[in-house]
Length: 321
Image 1 (cartoon, rainbow, N blue to C red):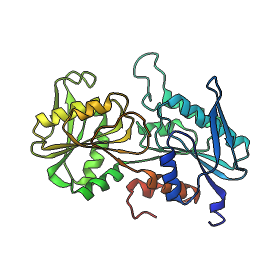
Image 2: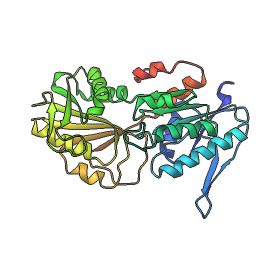
Image 3: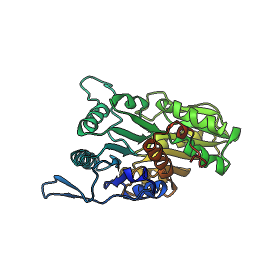
């Protein structure tokens, strides 16, 4: 460990200890010692069991289910680090909860993505590192540096190694809001793009049809969050009805809320690919495969700590140092 390495410490809270350990291994920085427990009334107590004075601290925590518990755990940890005279507090959020409410879509709705950004900043965070925000504009909700890493290059590399490239593959956006993400993957794979549209709007999932040609081709459905599985389930049926040879599904964050596994198991989807950004205890679909985001996040942490650009990771590949 160099003198510079001695100024960095990684800590993991309770949302995804397995991913945190992988990030630690990839970065070559051991996880620091902390304890987190709850009082009988549910209040969270954090105890940092080693000195952080003068260190650049990186806290790894996804705000997934139970989102409120993990969010408060993170806020309290930030406060503890600031009060213990850490040099900087950097929050690594593989999954940024509450990001789906990023605008006032109808009267009297909150903008929770901005609220959480304010809370993290007010608690004392100096920088945010996250993975595939639900909407890229959430970066602008922060008044501190916020780096949003993309999973599409990671997925592209995986599908390239499987030979799912070229004109025999069609990347399909399962809803209109996902066109940009689907186009990005299609460009990496040098494949055509198609879109699932619904005559009565996305919410009803009826009278769906595909804009584009998928007949006798392999289809890759792509979304950022796999929650209930309804979006992929409906889109896979529509793709098959349009003549697709086989259907793959990929999402950045696999939340797998109750019922999702059963719903996806009832489809003809060959494989459901997600990153390990979220740890869930609910059943997973039989066809699920996890692709670790740990190397990508570890590279970003080291680059940030060494004042190097993070932009090379936007075109991530295994050769990145």
